[in-house]
Structures are given as structure tokens and as C-alpha cells.
Length: 330
Ligand SMILES: Cc1ncc(COP(=O)(O)O)c(C=O)c1O
Image (cartoon, rainbow, N blue to C red; front, side, top):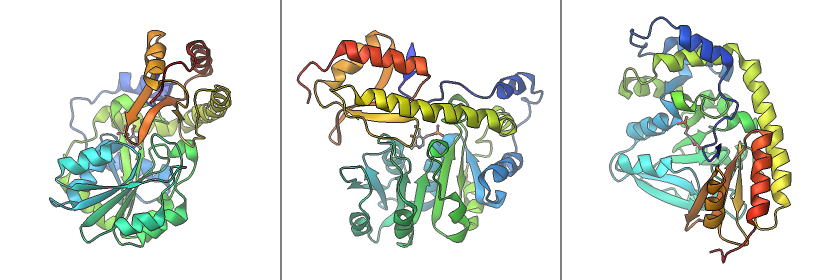
């Protein structure tokens, strides 16, 4: 099986994580509700003080926590579509209203349109950068124009390590800028559920007081410590994935029935321009290759392919060439 549908790290976590998890002696003790050790370790990596950091059970949990903190029923959340599905999901669970602002043809955010969408009830604006599933980042000057609106702007940098572009150092300068990060993608810890956010100092106390006390389990904390102790190994696999992304993009560009987009993340978005994406998706599945299929009003007839190991790319390309762009398409 070749799994290219979850934007996971095909090299897994650091071997040091595996060893430390097996030998850790204190799983019978509850974790620290204030996450002191994990926040201190992250401080060194992020370069922003621990007093700005809160960890969560994946960045998914932090999306939910931010919305719980700021939304009252009927409040609005701006979302630049197409984008990651958890923003509307958690907004609706929290009783908020999603205001969708369409990205342009290159999937960039139209700042004028975004500002027009900001109303009295707007509480939070989400920007995934790099965006999932399109893979592009939003420039810092555009993010700052949205910060100027005074609304809480959440920049979701779940794929930061693959883009190298971040606004995290700016967080302490603003009262309304948040950056979310994840250990799921670059550090190979998707299954352990660990992410973190960088927040204005004034928000941290409130977030710590509304989160579940033991939201970050001890295994995840051990894994963060060991990942940081083996950062060179992890940065090495990130480098390998980035160079594989560029190799895969070149190969995908040669396939006539798809139109792959350049990516700053660990996946490549591929609208199918000739033929039926669903059929291609199923044919790949039959060959044991799993990619993500979209057919929504904004993402018609498209695939998203996670970057795997070189042998995964080769198998994928061979399969795509065999399958061909037959079928009517939609
Ligand atoms: C843009 C974006 N944000 C957040 C997440 C969730 O990450 P985590 O595993 O840390 O909850 C994902 C996962 O696919 C994502 O694509």
C-alpha cells in the first residue's frame, strides 16, 4: 500500500522518539496541565517566549479552542476557500457562522474582497499558509493588512517546515495575531496528536483556563522532547521531502491529463483537465495507491497527492501513465 492521501511523513518520526517512548517509566502519572516542559522546549524551536505558547492535541484542537474563546452564537468567521475543512467544522460546532471568501484563480487571497467581508460580527479570520489543498503561502504584507482590521487573525502554519515562511516572530508585536503549528507533518507524529499555537500573551492565560487540563498526553510530550533533541535528523527528512516534491512536480507536469500546481507544502494539488478524477482515484486505489479525491463546487474533478518516498512517486507516475486520462471528466 502506498498512502499519499494524508500529508503524513513517509519517513516516520525520529528513531529517538521510538526508543524514548518504549522506555518512558511514568505513564501512570497525569501530565502537567500547564505544559511547562513542552512549552519551554518549544520556546527554543520557535524563538518566541514560552509565555506565548500553548500546546494542543494536534493543531485541530487549537482551532477549536480559539473559536470557543472568541465566538458567541451568530458571530462570523472568515474563511478563504477552498481551504482546510476544520475551520468551518469547528465554527459551526461553536455556533458561529462561516463567511466564505473565494480565493482568486491562483488560489491567492484577494485582500480587498477579504476586507469587504469583515463586518461587525466578524470575530476570527483563518488563513492556512501554506493552504491545504492548494499548497500556496500568503505573503506577510497581506496577512498584516488583515491584522489591521483588528479581528483575530489565525495563520495556520501546519506545513511551515516545508515552506520556510512564517509570521511567528511577529506575534508578540500584535494583540490579535495567532500562529498555529503542528508536529503531524514534518515531525512524523500525526498519530500522537501534538500541535501548538503562538499567541499574544494576553490570550494564553484564557486558553490555558478553558482547555482540558490534560489535553497533551505524556507520550506526545516525550515525543516532542526527543524530536527537538534530534532536530537535525528531522530537518534532514524535511529536506528530502522538499526535493522529492520538486522531482514529483516535474514528473506530474509531463502527464497530459492533470495540471499540477507548484507547492510550498508536502503535497501537490492536481486538477484533472482531461478525464474523470474519480475514475483515476479508484484505479490508483485498485493498485494500492491512495490519493485524496475532491469533487466539491470549488474543487471539481481534482486530486491532492502527498509527497512520499521516491519509490512511491515512481509507482504513482507509472500507474498514472497506465491509467490515462480517459472518461468524460466533470
Ligand atoms: C492546514 C491544516 N491545519 C491543521 C491541520 C491539522 O493538523 P494536526 O494533525 O496538528 O491536528 C491540517 C491537517 O491536515 C492541515 O492541513
